[in-house]
Length: 269
Image 1: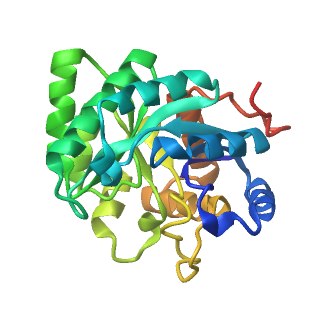
Image 2: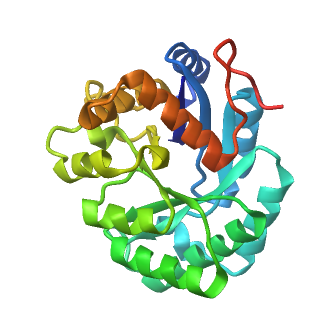
């Protein structure tokens, strides 16, 4: 059994055949999925998808690359949406991205505010971090000093082992995507080898970053999380079944998902 901890199934790439995509993820053993949110306006669509697929859970937040639209009232909007739906299990995705944007002040304000929402609601945060690891670490350290602990996951992680250690020390989980299957992703390989087994997660970040052997395909999908699991198991030289079990337990623990059983992909209840 597998959990794909980061998907974007509301994207138009899935409109023609989403039911078939779901059949494939079920056939591949994916029993839980966490649907991330790029901006709060997506929430009604994500909510409908979660009703359509009982194994699909939700996050709500504002992506750092969309923080040009950040206004203080969005904090209350995110909190309100999170409390309106029992299948919301996280805040995000939030974080920092200095690779594609330079509006650092806006990004940090939105990031901090969403950390406050997550802490107040006792929800984990899903963190996007690209070319911004030191800044994200510093902001999180300041938040912990000023406001107290917050829990969450570094999603689609691509950092160095040194950077990985920063976020492990802060208590975060580390999630690996299809990039861990890429031959030349040496620093990601090294990071995947060092994460403690009880802090390890896997994801697709679909429709992006299709893993080897599907890398040439334009659309990634949740069933491909199995290739991520296989790659991580090879890197860690561990049994694939044990890795599947551990990452599933980790996901259920972090996001407080109902535990699946061997006999059933039990829906939310």
